[in-house]
Length: 57
Image (tube, rainbow, N blue to C red):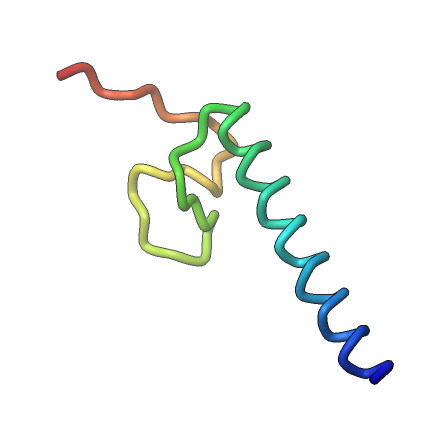
């Protein structure tokens, strides 16, 4: 029973962390789903720390 509570608490904490990180990235103007340097995302610029301006259609 206690193990189940610990697992649910860890999952909830991770979800809260992901929401916070997404909010922070959105506030900084980074694209949604920016994974930093780990992915091959040319429009992300996660390594440089600079934000990429949105393209005008």
